[in-house]
Amino acid sequence: VDTSEIGHAIAAIGGGRIRIEDTIDPTVGFTAQLKIGDRVEVGESLGLVFCDDEDKGREAVNRIQAAYTVDHMNTAPLPLIKEVINE
Image (cartoon, rainbow, N blue to C red; front, side, top):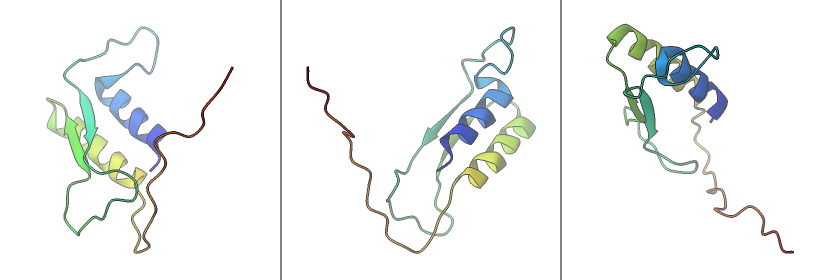
């Protein structure tokens, strides 16, 4: 999953800033419904895009779909804790 591309796709439709003077639309967003390693079937939803403009929403959906790589291999889920830092 190219999470950076997902963020850029949502920012481009108003869910974040591209330029410092941009206004963020709090009604725009994305919710992923699957985690890395989850099994996915053909036609199953990867997530939900929230946007009140159908054309912009479709643009974001296309970019987000392209940000995912789906293959036939089983992928182990990533660990929830990458590293513990002790003093």
